[in-house]
Image (cartoon, rainbow, N blue to C red):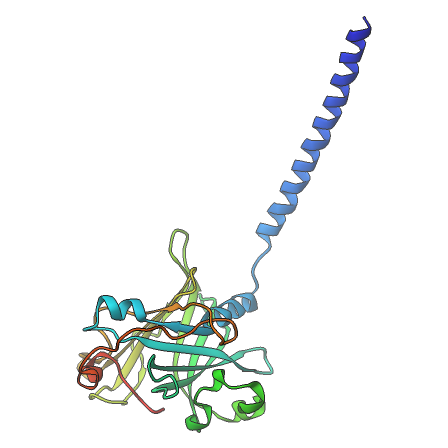
Length: 268
C-alpha cells in the first residue's frame, strides 16, 4: 500500500510538471508566432539593402572562369550621409583590383523605401558626383579626411538610374532583386549608346549581382557584358573596417582592347 501511495503521488507530480511544460511550450509558441508575424517596415527593407551593398567585393571568380567576358573588379561602397527624410546616401566606386586607387566609376547611391503606391520594397537611385576627383577612395580614408555630410549633399548631381527592388520569393537564392524600367535611362557615355538598363540582385551570402548594359537607338547592345551579370563576392577580411581585401589574381591580357566592349568606363 505504501509503495502504491508513493507511486500515486509521483504520478500526480509528473502530471503537474507535464502540464507546466505544455503551458510553457504553448506560451513560447505564441510569442514566436507573434514575432514571426511582426511586419517588416518599409524602412527595414531600405536599411537591409543599404547594409548589403556596403563593403568591399570582387568579381575574381568570374574573371578566373571566364576571362573573355569578365574582369576582376573591385566594388567598394560605404555610408556617406543620411538625408533629412531618412534616405541613406552611399558612396560607390569600381576599379580594377590592381589599381584600387584609380576608380573608373564613381556614384552616389540613394536608398529609400519605394513610394507606397508602387509594388516594390526599395528604391535605389544612382547619382553623378559634382567633383568626383574629391571622392576617390572615399571609403578607404579616415572619416576626418573625407568630404563631410553637408558637402556630400551639395555634391549630389543629376540622377542617372533608378532600380526598384522587391524581396525575392521563397526558394530563391536572393534577398532582393529589381531592374530599371524597360526603356532604361538616357546614356551617351561611349560606343554610340543612347540609353542604358541595369539589373541588380542582393544574395543571402553577401553577393551583389549587377548587369549594366548600353543600347543604341536601334535597340542593339553596344556596351556591357552579354554573358550575364557581374557577380561581386565578399573577399576575406582585411584592414578595411575588418571587412575585405584585394586578392592575388593576374589581370587578363590585352586589357585595353577588351575593355571597350566588355565594360564601360566613364568619368561621371
